[in-house]
Image (tube, rainbow, N blue to C red; front, side, top):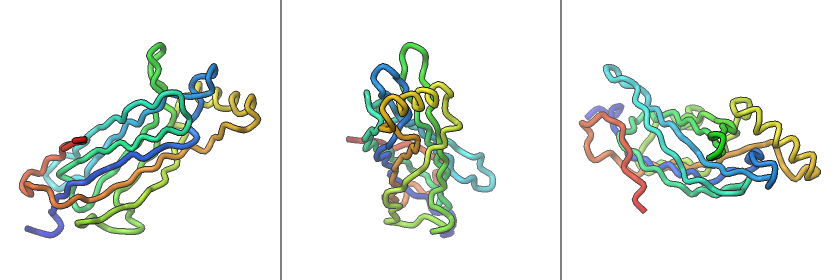
Length: 182
């Protein structure tokens, strides 16, 4: 098999978020979760594939700890693009997008391709708030004023990616979720 066509199984762990925007002005908190989209780099003859994942919701916090694992197989050696969207769960009015970030795995400035036992370590990702809802921005500014600056505007998400090994079936070019299996 050509080295460039090797497929891997990867574990993506959404560790935590810090300084999540205020979405509930009564409690100065939020009910955040992460929605992620993984897009593998296309191989000639194959359309780009996408998978989505959603973490559990953390209630009443601006600094959630998710520790949510997502195991994906069929990842090409060239890696993938991960879009991470931070969302506030709101059963009354519908969920509010708080912001998002896009991460290239592996980072092309540090490594050109994935390999067995590769581990990104904890990646700090800045959430771009301009892609979030206006309501969350306004509430965060009000909360910051009322709490004399105890609420920050520098939203970050930490995640980690680890190559678990080669995909079991190197001929199956599909991208698919294996777990979590807790």
